[in-house]
Length: 199
View (cartoon, rainbow, N blue to C red):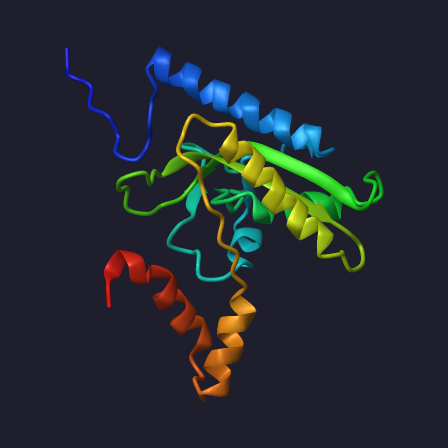
């Protein structure tokens, strides 16, 4: 019998680890619902064209194909979602006539990214996402509420006290433009990775 080897980046939990994960998920769900957010679930796959609409993610997408496709059934170009933003946006557009706005939704689902696994980075992972979606403009109150929910979740965990720092990319973007930087997106990516890659 051949020895089985694990596949890098796709975690499998032992029972005691899974119990901890389920406990954390339960805590997060209860906090989301305490603030009036409702759960939704979207499919694991999206059309490749939809996934590519976010831009610069083509290297992260896992394409899904059947091993054998009958001749009379064309292959669909679909892939696994790499986060919950794209599927939730599609979900809201497709179901807007059945939804009440502002939509206060949360999702806790698996996502898949074709990137190099590292410490705390997996190719398959669980993502918790929370949003308020409106047809018009939203008050800044909703942003503050999200921060409050995150703070409540973190303070409920058996970890040291956490400080939350708030940043807005528009401030950095405005600064870069004011000094004549025309490669704003590239600069933002580099600054974002600075703690990892160093100066």
